[in-house]
Length: 191
Figure 1 (cartoon, rainbow, N blue to C red):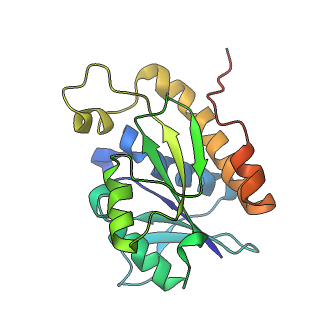
Figure 2: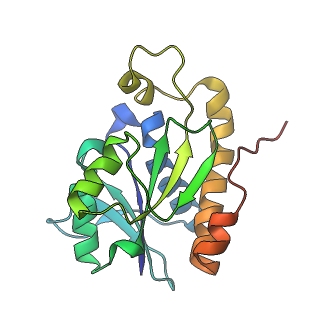
Figure 3: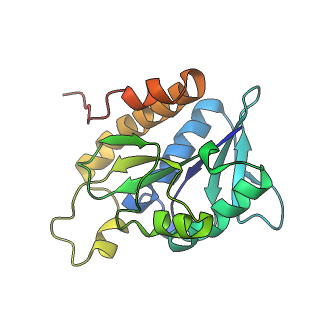
């Protein structure tokens, strides 16, 4: 079994913000499959949907971004997964908007959600799909930038990005890591 864990902040206040790109990917995948997330137990700080006929769980932690590791550790324990069986989906300010990067492991790169997961699991050896949200230009702080809504232009292109991210993860489920990781990761927008 694999768990695909989209990172974000729960609540209406954070919906549509750059930092919720991981949530947005999971939500897009759920819409494609006509599924809904549900809690699995009182002891699990997240919501989950399983894909019928496939050993896959889609997870959205209900902890805030900086405490994502708590919910991820619970998901790993609940499903009895090794860290090689999780894929964390998150935003990345170091990538141009719309760029996807699927990696088998790596550092947190300053991302507080990934940092929390690395601390909770005691390893960097878990896969992650990073969604480029671009480098902040005029925001006062990085925190302000990631907690802002996407620009109008970005919001127009965001559905394309989310579909490409889901395509890459579905390819991972169907054909394995190698083919999914070698898929074109650059931005691709229609004119």
